[in-house]
Image 1: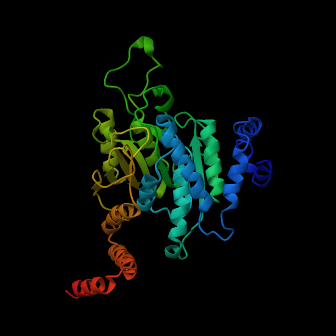
Image 2: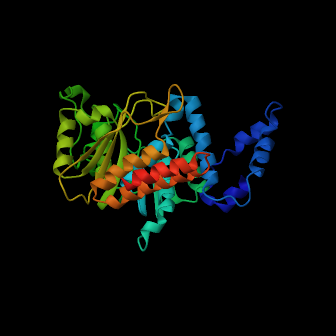
Length: 375
């Protein structure tokens, strides 16, 4: 670990050297590091793809699942992140996650760019990641996530409500995050004059606070602070995606005023309702919000995905790869890219043919498909 930190100075202080040292001193656990190294020694030297990134993400997911609400604070399920990235299509540039957790969103951006590199042609394909996270332990997780996935970026410890480490106003091509829901202790006095949060309106309580509490008032909840932040952090042609509590979609009073302003400014591109049990912290369904500052028409795309999921255990669900592509292609069709739909159908047809070739009834199946195609 010391050698790694010398090679990658940005990881200095982030690796859990003390934890591994303790493992080696305890009779019950001292063989674990050796066993771990043996497991890694079995990885073929000619492996392709982001294998170490997948290994790291697997351990994060298993830890989040075992820790319940505590683990879910830093981890957004991979399938949800992948869907968000497929819809906002980050083809390079500056990416901001103001509640970055363990860095799953930024990893997904890098993965998307690699998968779609052929489509980019002469377009900018590099990405630089900026992340803020208030817990130091989670900051370290995010730094390691960037390192194992070969991504460039900066992760800083900061409370986004009160700190702006990167001068975020109008600064980013893409913004992605899964911020905390319904936080009710943010000081109104600290945010109401901050252009990151007040450009489209500040969430306020229905009744004015008492004079004796002047300066101590809080926002009713911070959901619309985050929604404001996403909209104000974008460049003129920027796009954003965030996870938000369902209650924000029809919140009233000052929050309804903010939502109306966002619609009138033509910033909201799409809203997608997720199934329940997709997260480790909450069982209620959430909604994905998408912003596009380059949008030219006044319509908003609504997708009801509440009944689209794959059950992975009794308490948790996820999207399969096919479900992610099927939902994302709706956005592609909305943008008039019919060829994307045709390519997806061709991919499914080819995959089905390849599976059929290995079966005994291959000829009969192929004949049936051919007759169907002719009809």
